[in-house]
Image 1 (cartoon, rainbow, N blue to C red):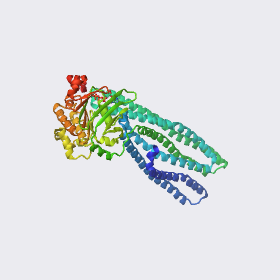
Image 2: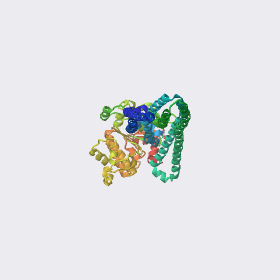
Image 3: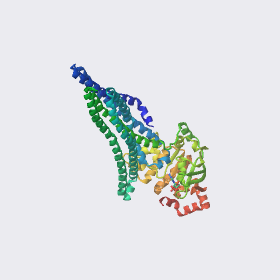
Image 4: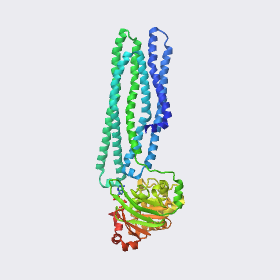
Length: 573
Ligand SMILES: Nc1ncnc2c1ncn2[C@@H]1O[C@H](COP(=O)(O)OP(=O)(O)OP(=O)(O)O)[C@@H](O)[C@H]1O
């Protein structure tokens, strides 16, 4: 997965990495030039050329490293971009139940914060790991050429660093993952609060929510501190090791110079090498710890990749077919439960709905009415039985084509932040002005549009919260009509309308039912009575089917509903 993120940037990473490496090598060559300089000083030869070389090496090294750094930073940003785009596509293709089970705030944190962390791992850390290793190896070889005994001393001390780092690095990954998860959970909690802000206020729950969010933030802090502790241990071991090596080399090297085993210039160069070694080793340790943090982020991103996604094909041609062919919608012994441990919600539903006309589903709350709509949209798949449209199992339809033919107004259909127009054309961005106006007029939104300061181009607020509940319902219906569906699924769209608006909407629905298949779920008797057929659902089964009059005579539950007006009261209860 990591490779997948880095691959598109491999050229930049290679180029930038090579530059950084070159810069590092230029730095590595400096001790050699310094050694030559010291030797020449002893012999009294001219040193101007060597001095120039030394300055040139330092300058060139710095500039090359700087350019390399920029190239890598840029590649890192591109990696984040690629990761965000990939995650966006993944998130939007997820199956509805998967997203319903997840916390939106947590998914959001993966999109914002984890992708940002990814930049740590993908370029800099990887390159630093390579350049740090190469520079270290080059320096160690050079040190070996100078004096094997001193090298032995150095390596022994460095081994201790390696062991310390080896123990610390996995802990960093663990702590970082915990910190990110805690941030995700806190984000989810925050999203919950902001999404129901008025309810939070009305319930006086601010203090409780603050405490809960702060607890989450503290969890993140604790994990972050744990990670910081391991990081500083890993990083600090570098300084410690180099200093210890320095003293050891100085002592043992001094003795070797005194015995004449090595020259003074060799000792100076060796110590310089040791001094320069701090950087690549520090780089290695830093890269190692960053890599762990990035890997923790990759782990969280890959968790999203593993969530089930919808399968969509091309479907353009089929979308046309949906518009042209008319056909029945048939439920054949449909059984469904929301999860393996949950009770069966639909227990063998069989309904045959003709291609045109209005079919109403009524029944007590929780009977499974909305669930049926969810199955038609294929948000969920039946556990057994089939649903056929045009005689074809919905499972065989291309999802895009299927949904292109459906106008779905869900219960409490949310609007999206943006303008009223954005909301109306959400299901069909290429709708003409006339079609928009037409839908607006049908749903009696024209008075609202006239009243709004910028008409159709007025912002409606987050989830449409600048509008009343009834207005939101009518916008949702207009949005479905603009889509020009062949199949309208209307789930409780009149619950918040006053009598006048309800009557108008009823007319819209009746008119629509003359040319298309309209399924409504309604608790209001007035909406239901004019349906061509009514399906009474009870506890996941079809109890009775017929017209209002037929059911009044034949079905006691329906007769009871009608008589006691429970059909109206149910929503509020
Ligand atoms: N996503 C879900 N996960 C688990 N259970 C669910 C889910 N959605 C609905 N249910 C359960 O399935 C049952 C049927 O719900 P459904 O929304 O279809 O009922 P309904 O007849 O539309 O009710 P209402 O008239 O109150 O809208 C209910 O018992 C509900 O608790």
